[in-house]
Image 1 (cartoon, rainbow, N blue to C red):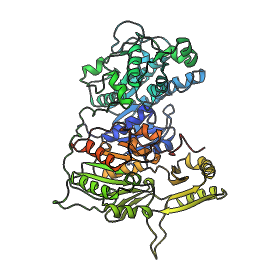
Image 2 (tube, rainbow, N blue to C red):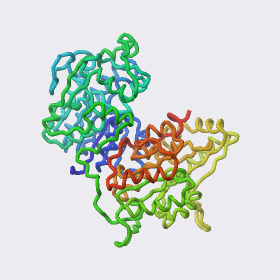
Image 3 (spheres, rainbow, N blue to C red):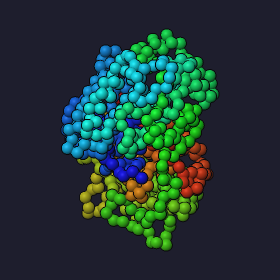
Image 4 (cartoon, rainbow, N blue to C red):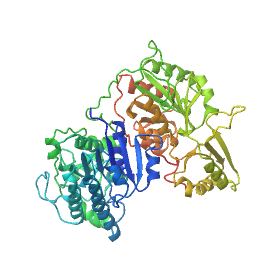
Length: 609
């Protein structure tokens, strides 16, 4: 097993970067993330709650203090760059594509080669668009550069990265279109495919390189851990596909025939970008193959099936998850100084956790209580994750006879079940509470209540506020969200959650149930792959993004998309059957959509209006 590393990552909030962050955290690494929007990065990765994530504000195209932080890392993964499909190309977009790649890589390479102790390896993203097309033969590394804007940019891009080769091992990781249903090219074309139209520019016989996102993460890990690997590396599947095969495989899985879009319409819609990426490139991964790399998802049909939810994602290479070593059982959270250890004759060590919400349990408390006791005898602990706080969860805990940890107040509080003891609470600053109340004071039909992490005690100071509850009619709620956006939500000073019943909850910035779940898992020395979540509302999206999980009951479209196991009938029998199916064999397998923690305003597609 590779040793834990300190890794510097640029482009961490992109579709590949998000998955890379989750993957490296799962491997135990410490991460330093450079972002132009640090508040967004902290919310997305729950950096406030995760001591192994450090977010720095900075622009990789501009020198700054971030370069000193890079010099203290063991490895650098440089992914930053303006997305090619961010907008229709014009002179401004072309300049942004060029500058973000060439200038950014120059500054990163400069930091590497001037460091007193340079990082061991620099992995700099590149693209297979650099290579010449329509040559009629396989393209191995280093390959022949093509013509056009993207080829020119990628050539300079790689040249800047190689300036650091005198100080560190440098890899130009040439990436093709990545099959990832949560971002990139595949996410963009899926809506077209579902309508029977293929907007991609490749002709029937064109060779098209590709890679599944899981293999791309494995290739990055392989590049970090392989001292002999250097220079240009093609991070592609063992064999390219063709335009016709891509359409056929997608059509079979979607149950319809997919027709290519007429090329003149594609050129009209996509402009210059379509002309740049089309053409036949039979790119082969010779360097990876020679270095002993093993692909997990090398079949195109299976890769698409995984992203369309028709096939499970296999465990990663060398994953030692199947059965964790036995360890002492601790009922405490790592952030609290006290530790409560079970006697040696007590229950088996915790090897996995089931995460339940009050809504998932519903009226089945008696059955849930029996199931929780049975799971615990199997080494499966249970975590409660609730939107509300102590004032509403205590009766449920008593009814269940619950003794495990509870994530309350949407993640702002952690509580020990058996001892009814607060382990951790993140308060809203008093000045933020006052500002929120002042902004909302003039809205009619709106009620704002303060909620503390524990009840007030006679003779003691009033407990700090961890959550504000805002309730009113639909118009009042929309007005409240609008007033909270600028200077509060968008600046990361608060997190806002839409709840059922025309309610909104407000917590400190960076709070999310997923951040609380990360703390619980760390206390048990378990990775996110060992948690199975049963989510009941959009406020649970972060947990679904972090771990394997089901969307129970009347799930929204966003929940169904985030849940690796899809929707589940709301009955308790279905939940028990699902837990038995996943964990009864002692393994459970790999999480299928671990993409990091999303801190959002559930129920909307973006920030408050």
